[in-house]
Length: 157
View 1 (cartoon, rainbow, N blue to C red):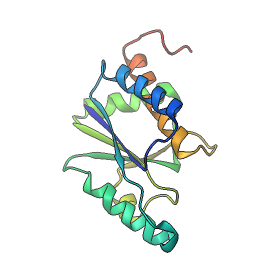
View 2: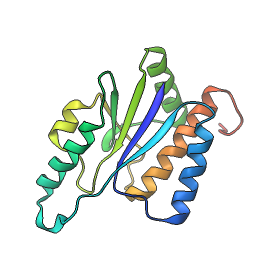
View 3: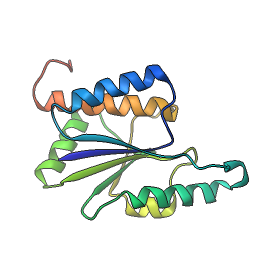
View 4: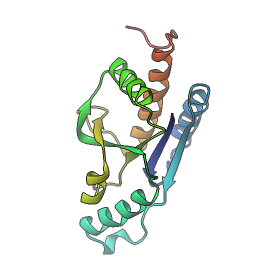
């Protein structure tokens, strides 16, 4: 099963980029994993929030393929403990899902069309994190999930 991580905008902090790259490299030992950055919209001060969400939504939906299992990282989504998240990924794989696409939207969230296309929503925490930090936290949790599934000593419970 391939994991695709779609994000709106570029990761800007060098330290964050370095850590994200480290976990993406580690993940490569377990499963195909790719981050796809959708360029941030230009001239957003002239756009309403609704228009920004619609335009970003169109760009997100263009990245999807038939059969993809779309999961939104959304504050209203289901929260998982790390072991539960690992189990969820394993169940998707056993179900024959070829590609899971996780998406972090723009600053105002997702358009109605993206919500309609999503199979599920997950939340990393009830706390709010910057979009930049969410990327690192999510990639680390994917790596943690893979080590849990392999019974490796990275995760301690």
